[in-house]
Length: 127
Image (cartoon, rainbow, N blue to C red; front, side):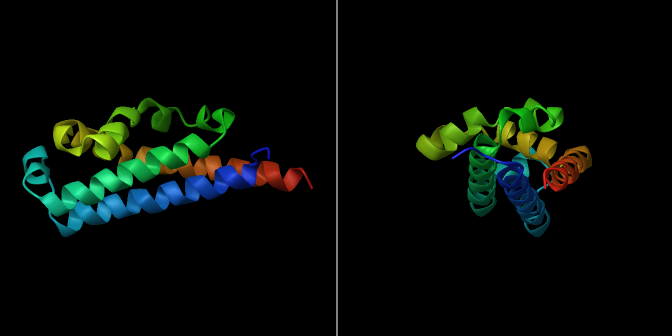
């Protein structure tokens, strides 16, 4: 089954949801530094799971759509996702913190929203 704009839209909408969940974790646990993340096991688990979810969603998005999101594409989540999924005790929370701060950048949100908007316009033109 060929992926469509609708699949990409769904995945990007879920990315936005996971991004919001990360923001909620940082706010709820008052995570303002790498050290604060390193000291909070619950926040670590939540953020690690969110990164895994974001990475898995990105894999489902067509490459031509990912290429329209250079900021998101520039965040290399694969290593953190693989380590958090397969060798959690080796996860470097300094890297995790940096990646999540990049994901929480408002420019990423704007990029995601603009991509959804463009896909919806394109989908509407196909009917």
